[in-house]
Length: 228
Length: 113
Image (tube, rainbow over all chains, first blue to last red; front, top):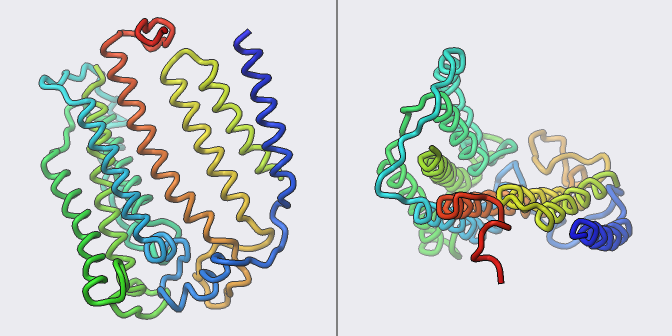
């Protein structure tokens, strides 16, 4: 009975959603208008970043990204508050097999290097601070899964996280002091498509990469400590 | 067109899981399915046939060859918020499981009214 009502409800929602979106032609060659066109035409000259998505996320909507980083920090804090317990339960999981353990030991530094590459080249190639941080946290997850006794130092992680967050805010305040607005670009733009270009964008993305990596790693470790 | 249908199907599967399933982990999974469906929908709205990603990796590329960068930037934000919300929801599920020793929402008496 409940399922029948749910399916009926879903059919209703699905019909109206689909009939609305079928009015929007998919993938037709259209002339972009408004803010998208402006970003495409002026983005390269104004920000100097080859990757326009990065220049939108970090430069045009940089304040929004600061809020996004804050939401992630709040989620990590909330998780820590919810899952905190005075006596951490000892993990009774089995150690992984020797193949997994050896492979994890070899792959771990390579994954960290890949994550660092992704966030340092965020203004040139697809990727950026959030993606690189997630790759680094996945490397730590591999170590957590393979070694039962592998632990990270939460004090170091929270220091890294808070200093990376402060770097983001300080770059923004320097823009306010020496430039036109909060998070304004105060460094020379450099040559497009080289590593040292696009002003403050790489600096902000490196800070975001460290912050997200430390945050997600701490989050995974907190969650794993509650699993018996 | 197939992208719209796939995205809306993902949203509908997610709403079905939220409405019908009794296991709390499956309800959280339903929420993440709704999240991915909405993300695919937004990105496919910005797609233009035969155009490439908005990255000036090659000097011959001009602004006319690229898709709309705004939906991609918005979805990048939405994915991160989705991860944060999922992690918080899962930790609440862990705490409820510790307290009641069950994941079945029908067996948690305090939810009844």
